[in-house]
Length: 278
Image (tube, rainbow, N blue to C red):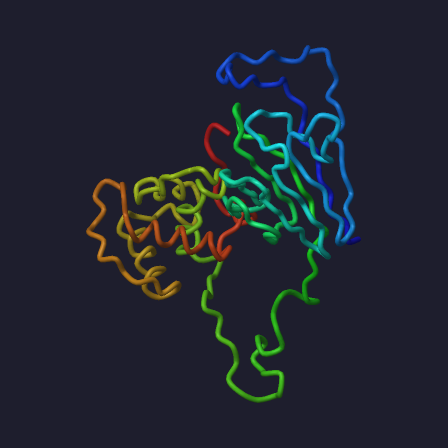
């Protein structure tokens, strides 16, 4: 099925340009939730979004004074879609609803920016909170058996040559992987989380695991150094000893690299003990 689905934004009370911070009325509690309206686009089909003009509504209406009358367009391709930004000043953001903070920025005036996500949310700056609508692309196609090519099994396509070596060979059953996972956990759960856990926090997070009951601060630091120097081969920023668990260039680099290349993912969070308090 090569269909891109656009979920229209939920209607909300209008925002007056001179009452930006006024309290908005809430819908009656007894009102049943309405089903979201959907648009289905085949390859090559396009719809525009924005406030529209009197007598000329757009397919994706966004009745906010802070949004352009013709704010942009969505064009369906085979298994992805393109976003055009008709605004001269506003940058649009497309979030990956399945990713850990992964997003694409579409600059003012950019036409046909490809969006590679299957489940996306488009955010537009507005007078109230940013307005949003969702876009769903067809399921992406992958090579049978995974994304590995012929030479990744140790034999080249021609039957000779050096085998491909994995640049990031991580063992999810190893303690160093649990340390990396604990470092990445806050941003996996909430992409807006800014602080990377310190050594003390990592130690407390892993202590309830039977395999980590004897873990010490020195051992956590050792695993971090091992990840930096051997497994992920990051350049050591010569970080001083971290006495209080705050700051740390090594940990920041590890988390950034691991999330950028999906070395740790949400599915790995089951390896950690349940969080206290839910």
